[in-house]
Image 1 (tube, protein in one colour):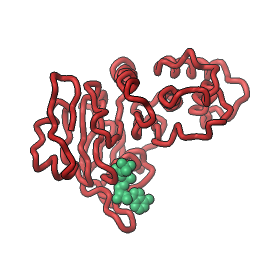
Image 2 (image 1 turned 120 degrees about the vertical axis):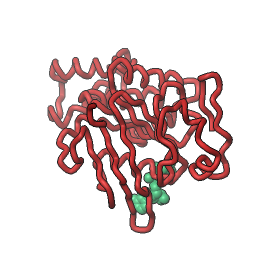
Image 3 (image 1 turned 135 degrees about the vertical axis):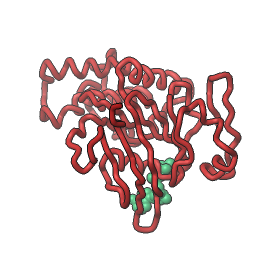
Image 4 (image 1 turned 90 degrees about the vertical axis):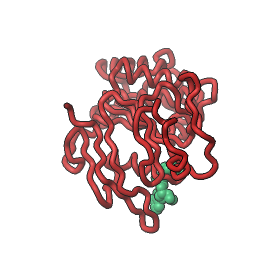
Length: 257
Ligand SMILES: Nc1ncnc2c1ncn2[C@@H]1O[C@H](COP(=O)(O)OP(=O)(O)OP(=O)(O)O)[C@@H](O)[C@H]1O
């Protein structure tokens, strides 16, 4: 069996005053569409930074594509869309295709006119997120949800195998959240991109996701999304605290907490 794309082994992480992660073990397999869920301050961003190799665990180890993360050289295999990617200066003068091409800038350097091959890659990435028609528009003219799609295209342009998204639906209105998840699901299924997304909004978990990890310093549940309702009351309480409504699974549509 192929090695997991991301394998977190007994990882703990401590900031100066705070223990953010406590002996976390979890694996992300090729083809997973995983949502990491947890309340504010539960360690979600810290876990992402560990997966991305931005910080090193205080204890434990991480393997990426079967290689110890300290030796791992193919950072371009892991794309990242940060929480703040679309909170840029709204007067930013770039076009959509320039923003997406920026995802290749490390490889190609800065350019005034896109080389032919780059232009094709940019077009493909925009097509994957349903934004090809907006190629020549100024990024500042787009809605929050459209900008988020463009930033996903920017991460996709270097053809990552895994895409990690930190709270991608923030700033997208309720009516468009489902369409946004449809787009992510198409990337997952049709383009075989493994997806890991983080959110504290449990209501955004939809049928599109295959796996769920419930994090609050430790992992309280990790498995198929359909089994989430089997989590015991004690576990749920320990995970999310007192404000949690009981998880129920309604005719295979949404999973609410
Ligand atoms: N740079 C830092 N220095 C010190 N403590 C930090 C730092 N970053 C995070 N922490 C602490 O570590 C814990 C986990 O934070 P983290 O940002 O990983 O949580 P989160 O689940 O992503 O939260 P949110 O949903 O609010 O974004 C919190 O108690 C936080 O205060």
